[in-house]
Length: 111
Image (cartoon, rainbow, N blue to C red; front, side, top):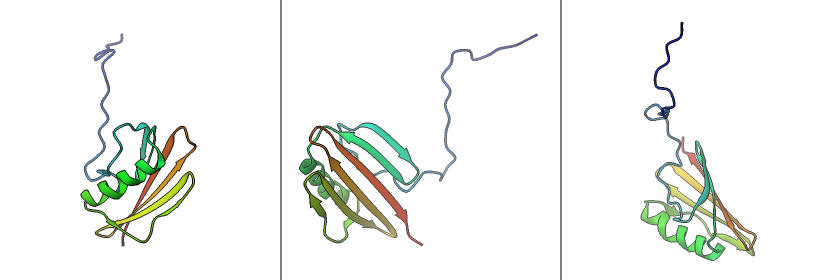
């Protein structure tokens, strides 16, 4: 005999406490699509232009307590930005093909 319960019910999987990666709480553009978080890495796409994404992060990262580190590098269709907060470093790689912009944020924890 079989006894089934909770058939067709949503399953909630909750990560253990203090299990989040360092990328939790970083600013994300409001029109982000295809967002993926893998520990200390966040990627997503946006319809916003490259210059608008750069301006967003230059404003919002300091608002979230991150300090700019070094000079940003920008070329046509590509930019990198670096920020620090406490003992963490955030590296942003932003690319654009003219139709959509892709953002990749990698956070490393200090020693």
